[in-house]
Length: 252
Image (spheres, rainbow, N blue to C red):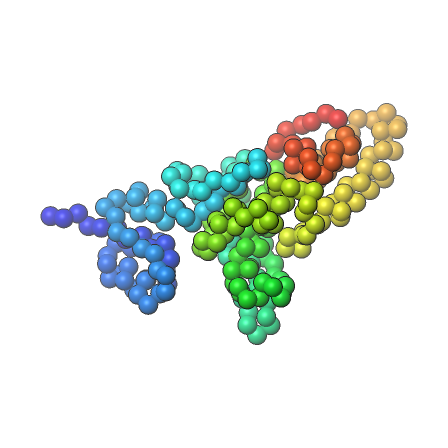
């Protein structure tokens, strides 16, 4: 007797695993660009769902497609690796695109973030613009909070391709920070970040140092990096190499 197939639907009215052809057919019939396939094992089906559906980004100026990676690594955050789900939408009535991010922390907590935009040159690609902004926001949030890599789950293939584009904002932000001048999803610009941490150093830290006190500063990745850059006089081009690993201490 032939072994029953497990059907994996990566793109369709519904996605996931289905155990009969009738269920799978309902999920994909009439859906433009549906992606599905039948497998003999659940492991193969789950791997198909993950391939092309996630991107692993590191703060070492590189990115890696998630093909062949253990599915646990794609769905479970650790102290070094953050897992984020992003999606985009478009409201025709108000001509705005938007994004949503679901951030899964290693302790089980879930953080939800969203944003929107209406840049004229991006309105033509509608929800795709929102999803791309969501991916950029996810990367920035991960590295600002001390994670060395982030796994992004998405459903638009252009998200993955954008990491290969030299002038993509994500690549500029992490590979050429000196050329990055726009904020992502309403986040701080470099100028705003350095102004905030610079004022903190001048108004809070310096007076206590002059009194001979030792100071412990606890903060997230980008804030720590900006403080280190200012204390050591490092240029913005070296911003990401100045930061700390998560939960580590650096004496200045």
